[in-house]
Every structure is written in C-alpha cells, then in structure tokens.
Length: 195
Image 1: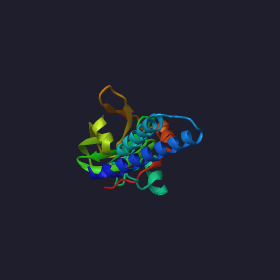
Image 2: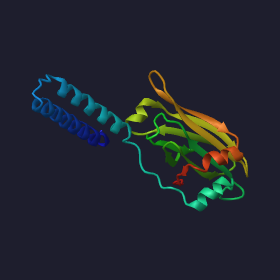
Image 3: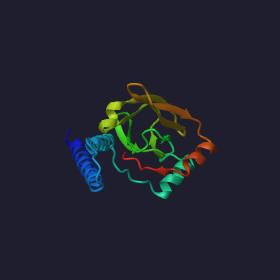
Image 4: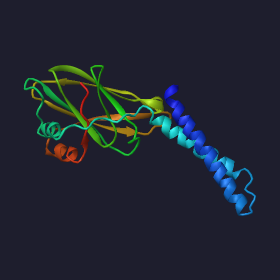
C-alpha cells in the first residue's frame, strides 16, 4: 500500500489545483460554473492517481554497454558452452509499465516497450516468466514460457500486450534468430541483465 501513497497524494493535489483553478477562472469571467470545476478536478485527480499507481512497480533499468549489445546482435553467448536467450518487448499497450522478466525464478531485467535484454543460459530446460508490478500487475495475467536450450542456441522471444475484458495478457511468441531479428533489435535500447 505504501508504494501507492505518492500516486494518491499527487492525484489529490491535481484534483484540488484543477478544481480551484477552474472555479477561479469561471468566477473571474462572471459565470456560474456550479459543480463543473469540482467534477473535472475529481476526474483528473483520479485519472492521475490511477496512471501513477499503474507505474508504481516500474523502475529505471540500466542500459547495456555498446559491447554487450554488439555481442548479442552477433548472437554470441557469454560462454561457448551456453545458449543465448533474447527477450524483447514491442507494442503500444502498457509501454511505459515495466514488465519483470525472470528465468528459473531469478530476476533478469525489467522491460518497457520497445526494449530488449539477453542472457546466457546453461543447456537444458528453463522457465521464462513475465509479470508486471504495481497496480498494473493486478490488471495483467503473468505468463510462463518453457524452453529447452542447447549449447550455441539462440532463443528469442517477443512479448506484447493484448487487451482483455477483465485482465490483459502478455502474449509471448518465439521468433526465428536471423538477420530480420538483428534489424528489429538494432534501434532498441538493450537493458543489461541483473544476473
């Protein structure tokens, strides 16, 4: 609950300032606005608090170095006996909300859209999980995707958001590792993995 307090405070301040500003504007113009300033202020205050609460779980990820990004674009895992896992996020829906990525229950990075990250993984079976923090986490179904890695493999997943009636969902699609993927990733910011 404490992470939502700043959103509530800012929403309240927006409501008070907008209501007061509109009331002053109408009274100085000699017009009777009635409840309009209060209603507009309340709407904008609630809307501001809602947006900020959705972004409460979002944090600023550290960008990868140019060398790290170049190694990924050349599909080079960190160690020759490992595989390279690339996850990128695209789409407009929820693009400012950070999506947490974990591999085998270890946090890897948080991605906004359009961003990507990559890590080396050992051969064998793995679980990739994606979920949101903050209020956005309660509105989106987390996703779990299994994959098997072999030494030298390049495994790439594309994540997008799909709007739903009650909950949104994260759509994960396995992408072929080729020149088209390199061209898609080149303009994106790479977020350095935390593992």
